[in-house]
Each structure stands twice: as C-alpha cells, then as structure tokens.
Length: 74
Image 1 (cartoon, one colour):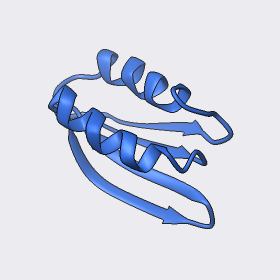
Image 2 (cartoon, helix red, strand yellow):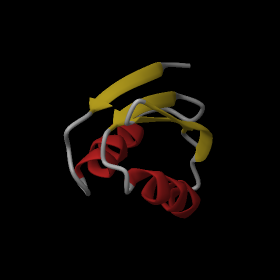
Image 3 (cartoon, helix red, strand yellow):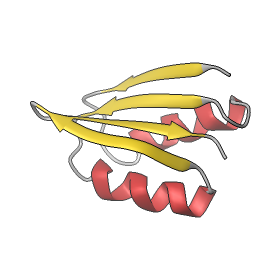
C-alpha cells in the first residue's frame, strides 16, 4: 500500500480534483492520497467525487484556510 501527498494549494476548481483523479488513476486499490487545497468549494466537491468514483473519503479537515482530505482508492 502506498500513501501519496498532493499539494494543490492556490489551485482553483477543477484543478485539485483533476490532480487527485490523475493520482488515483495510477494508484492501486487500498492506496491513499492526502490532498491539501485552499479552494473552499473543494469540501463539497470531494464528497461528491468520492461517491461517484467509489473511493472512500477517510478524513476531511480544515485548518487556517487549508482543507486536507485523505482518500482511499476503492
């Protein structure tokens, strides 16, 4: 199992989701990706994206304007 880290701070929609999509496409089932973003719309987007792609949203946190999501490939 591999853990990936993506820094997408400063990117606007759909940039962070596209970067996550590329990483998850290359990942194996069970791998995780932690993505950090500053686009506040990402919070809603990531939940919908995980449901549609059958990936698991492990955690979603916000600290000092930075949203961090951990996603596990399904």
